[in-house]
Image (cartoon, rainbow, N blue to C red; front, side, top):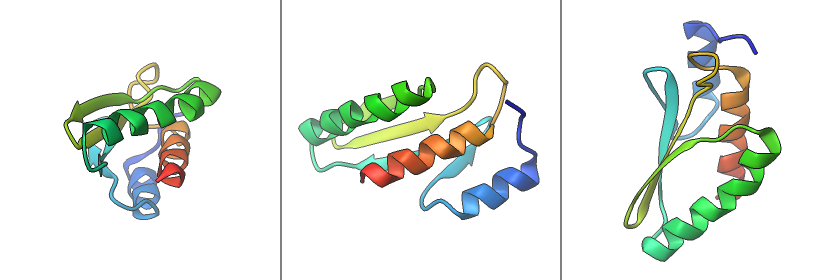
Length: 92
């Protein structure tokens, strides 16, 4: 999968709500109300991530889950990263 240019990344980010570029990744915070909600949200990410064989980096801080997506194997951002971000947004 080819890395996206900075212009392509900015264009794709404009189509996503709340996602921001953080170095070679895109990231978004999801507030889930409490710890249980955060854990359940993380569980809901398993199926789309496994289906794509593309796994985000996750951090839970009580009621907030931070999701960061990057194509580590490619060393940056690819179309798959944005496709997974769209699938994650569809879960909320």
